[in-house]
Image 1: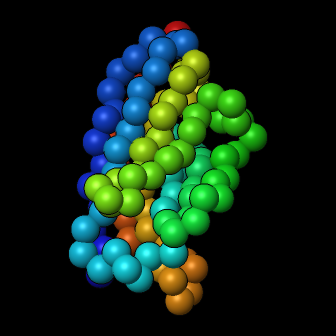
Image 2: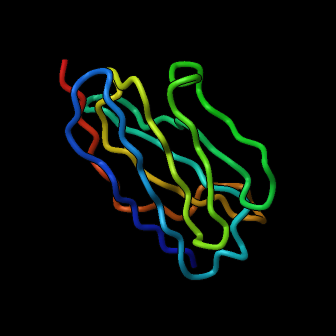
Image 3: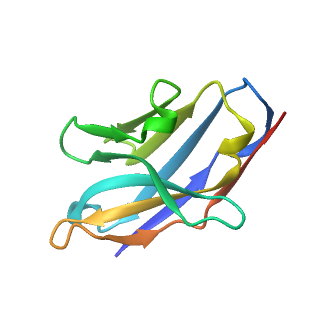
Length: 119
């Protein structure tokens, strides 16, 4: 089983930046990829960005393209989400999730970190 711990959330003014970190431990060898999700109050959880653990491919949703960047440090088993030009609509709880090698489903989740962007 994979354990995930996020950090780096906080309160920032619009236009500001934050970097989220997600440290993975446990059976990381069974991980195909990692993703960052977010859930705003009253809204469904959405995938924001994702990457393959062993490869270089990444994915970002249109609304964050050019502002957010997902990256990884394999040696540290850490995935980052660098967020620039933050907007109030980016306010949400951000979750890190691990995608299993076999099912490609996101089966392990972190506890979440709050990001709040003031106007």
